[in-house]
Image 1 (spheres, rainbow, N blue to C red):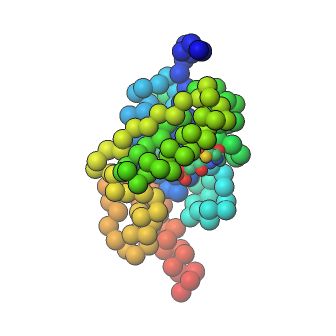
Image 2 (cartoon, rainbow, N blue to C red):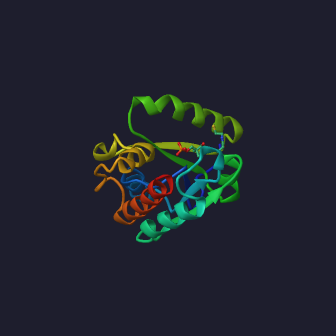
Length: 171
Ligand code: PNS
């Protein structure tokens, strides 16, 4: 059995298109449990994101700068390979409801099969945000619904700018 490393680095991976207050809450709580937390954005353009990887990492950096042990990067390929490259021994993920569990379990077990030395840790989402996702926030914002309090204010402004640009292009 391997010993606990002297400094625990965790990786919090995701699409973050864009970051929500649910993600931010997880980052804040996760950062208290480890020495360093790296928030890693998946570079996977096949998902047709609203924001580019650079825009997403910019938005993340803006909001996590208040947490001194949190960094932001991006990755391609296998998540566990990126974790090893960054010296992370923990993967952090959030669970909002039982519906998240099946997908998260599948990923955690596959990641464990690839790299048994890396442990996935789940935090339960804050109940205030357990109903939100980037997808639903984008949908409501695109229909001019109220998303205040669900994403950081800087992200809300960017979302509105991006969506109105798309609307004008489509008009
Ligand atoms: O925020 P998301 O979209 O639910 O995050 C999914 C993510 C990025 C964690 C997952 O798609 C991923 O790890 N992709 C990298 C490819 C990989 O390692 N796949 C095997 C894990 S099952």
